[in-house]
Image (cartoon, rainbow, N blue to C red; front, side, top):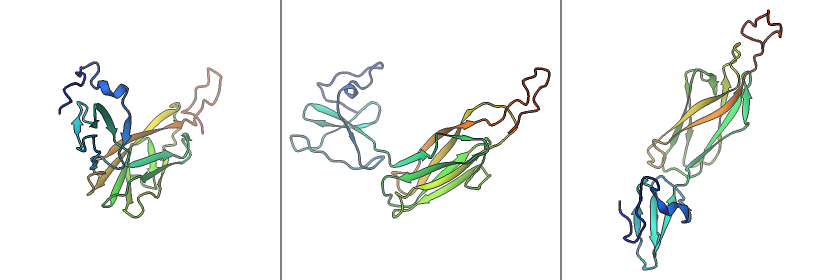
Length: 196
């Protein structure tokens, strides 16, 4: 790690003083693509920052290079009732060199994902279909307990011989709406777990 001699010193309170005013450049692929940008002298100059993001010195200006996401996800609705199914779509934004397996892990608050009740299901993307969205149908557990609305999570894990994808992971969440309610407003009549 190094920085130009005339660069501001870094501190714990402001570990990267350049980030506040320098333009950001999105890389076309990641997480460690080869990118060569010529400085005015004609020589590519790279500087590693304390936060391990990559940057490049163009003349007297240090430009921060941000990693572009190599995949995207989206819920097809903002929330789901306990007795319904919600769809999560996954696709890659960069063509992989090898197949990419995306494993979705889900906890016991979910009844199933794509019909699986074992706690996980997986999708496979190839270099030819990488940008075609694949769907995962998730169904929350429909209980008889008044648990109120809640956020439920799923984990995405990426496995591939392509180092740009292998080891990537993300936790996603969605709002699950409790469909149980108290049977009576009479304080002497307590609910028996609730109703659907």
